[in-house]
Length: 279
Ligand SMILES: [Zn+2]
Image (tube, rainbow, N blue to C red):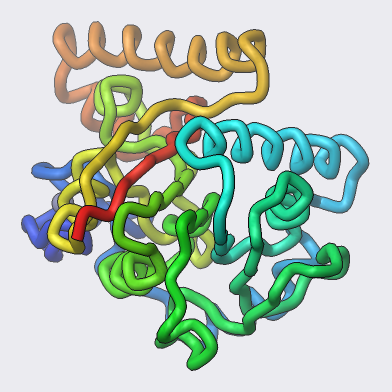
């Protein structure tokens, strides 16, 4: 039985697949016809900080390196002022931003174990209305790393993020890469989609479609990695998948379509987005 559902990013009718989601034919985002219940999500995230980063030494070190990489991106556009990091979990980014002179706040459902002194912690999440402490506050920089793929209601979460940004301020996000030249031809679906953790994979065009009506201009987007070697390894896999997939799609479209549904391809890109608030 075929089931169509409206894409959660743009509303275009999308075919639900056996793996639990569907790829929008218009904006190329991946979303779900049926979201997990809020109680299921609450239960999942109650244990999240204990498992995020895996607790291993190399994972911990990479979290530090990614946080440094995020800071480099932010400082390319803005060097000082107030900053709020949303949904940090155990990410050391708020500590690193505070260490580089940003007046830092963090918003998350749980206070992380090692939050540096001087950082304002506010309890909350993008799944709920903004807490009272933030309703009248706006920030020069709002960062939201690897969060948007987790939220069940992208539009509501985006509106909450938008409300936190000062006019002229910047919004930075990272999320799994989807709906790009490196993902659309591969003979397999994205391994990044795994509910109840990753519910929506948002394409660059869908991000623009969501944030432009909220008064933002898209400054840039790109692909994130820690070093050129890691970049070549990660995106080399994407390029190989894309080339092999494009060839198969041309030679044997039915086989390509079957693999697109049944196989998980190996590319896991990370995209970043920079928006500036105009109004
Ligand atoms: Zn769509």
